[in-house]
Length: 313
Image (cartoon, rainbow, N blue to C red):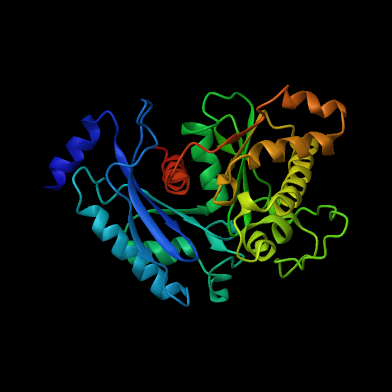
């Protein structure tokens, strides 16, 4: 059986590998097509989801990761067990070690993620920040595909994450860049407490999912124009800061908050106001500088792409 799978993988136009996305409420895995054709970067079959154990401590999370992997291993056209597996994780990750705890238990801090997961899965594992993973996938297979230069992918959900990708490769310094914690100027009269436990005036604390829900007080964002205007203003300031710092060729927005009709255009308008005609506005063109994410499972796809890159497959 193993020989058959191996041969199928080698001869397939779209060889597959396993990607797993560890989130605060759910852990999702899938077989993702590689290659370069139109189906590259898409899931082969349905994704498999198991709720994240609560509390989300290392041992139960690793056991859940093993259960997801076992289910995917049993599927047709699953990769051989020695193939690298990619895991995207909601924390700052350096050399496979967890340095922060976002939406997971604090006991993860200092944990050797790669070693812990490899011990449970008995195969090579690459662990990456979830925003970096999504950024890489969107740049190679999604809304940034074909862009030469720098693509910045911003994911707006429970937090604000960002992945910088240059010519198909993630760009970071000593650690993953935490763009959600860049500071913004509060709108006049905005006294909403920040949802960030560290900063009173960062973009994440004022405009990510929990902050937006607190502002809405049960309403829908599309029905609350005053909330939408404040959120667009803060996200526009964030975009302007990224333009001044990096001048990306394209900025891609994904995540649940950005599914609100018309919000992306409002954020772009706010960004243009924040840039205020300075020369950097040239990178934005006349319109459509901000684009929506194109991939439904960017985290899974990016995690396995990074795993493949590390293994030089």
